[in-house]
Length: 177
Image 1: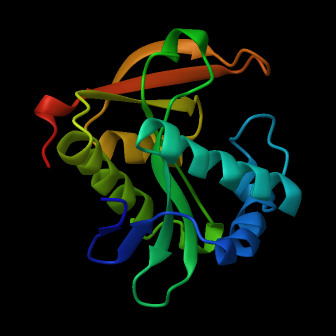
Image 2: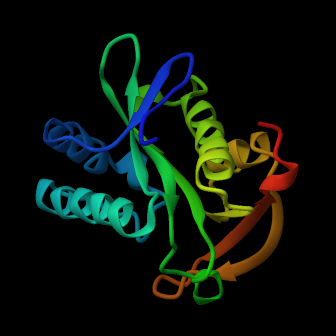
Image 3: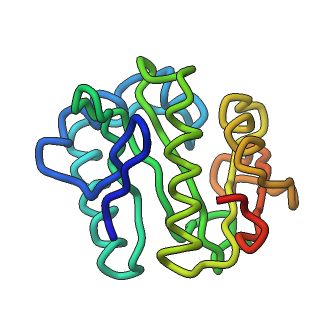
């Protein structure tokens, strides 16, 4: 299954017409503030990223879902699963992440999409554990993490930018799907 419907969202694979709206999300300084060095991304970067996300689906059997609003068909951003490339101690884990455009913040979409993604991880992909890597101070993401029932496992540091990170985890056998 690579499409999930929630009461307000469709989580699905990427389409060509997602490029421009996802590039607009990546070009918003408010969205990118907590990501890597906080730099905005352009259309070319977004196209390459979407290609990598689709490759991960083919290689791993999971990846980042495009998050579409059911009512309007608008692309709100992404949520999904990936193998993290940092920090080094998380390289054998599967991480959940999300990025939504700022017009979609504060409406519960990130929590709704992330919850459905954890259900997918457990029920469809048979994963027994998922982590989340969050820059310390990103209270909005920390709030979603708490709603998912994830617990702080350890602190780490971004290997390139040096800022502190929280690594949360959830044992999916205890997840309330």
